[in-house]
Image (cartoon, rainbow, N blue to C red; front, side):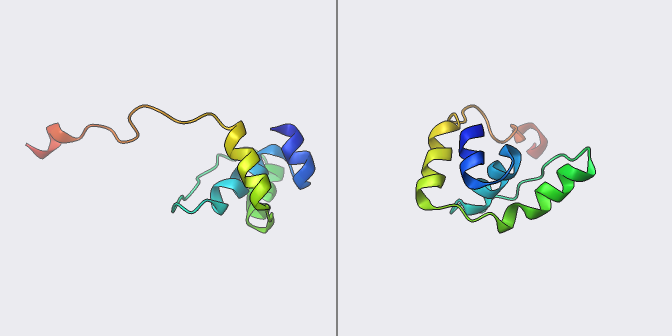
Length: 78
């Protein structure tokens, strides 16, 4: 994904955040931040404008998620 970030003119983590923000689903990414420079990159992610082709390329580069997304809370409902 590094080559896609270079093409977009941003660091890979910033590209990933911009891609999440550009998706039609309502996603609220909560990135971890250990350094001030990472915070600056995270805050700048909404200003990264990805073309439809760039969004498609990132989608193809990211493996499909699988498995349970929500923990089983049925025991708590008893």
